[in-house]
Length: 64
Image 1: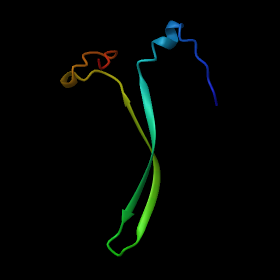
Image 2 (image 1 turned 60 degrees about the horizontal axis):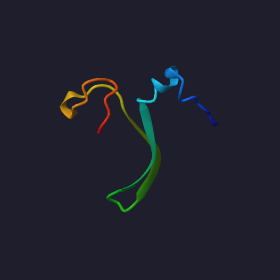
Image 3 (image 1 turned 180 degrees about the vertical axis):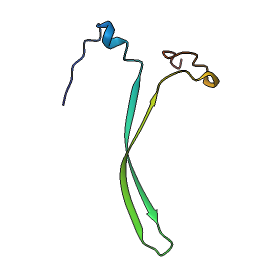
Image 4 (image 1 turned 30 degrees about the horizontal axis):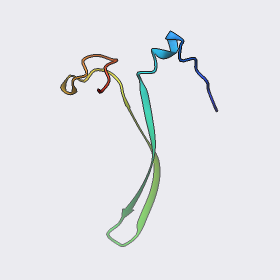
């Protein structure tokens, strides 16, 4: 499903600093008996919020 957003709308632009990135992951586990099991999954991660050790003091700070 496609969505179009007005990036000049302050309500939309205020959300742009927060994002989640999705990756499809595949893993193969090899067992001691020689058999293998394959699995697929979705790995999601995002950056949101302050993290003082990295120098991000507030919710909207981004890396240089």
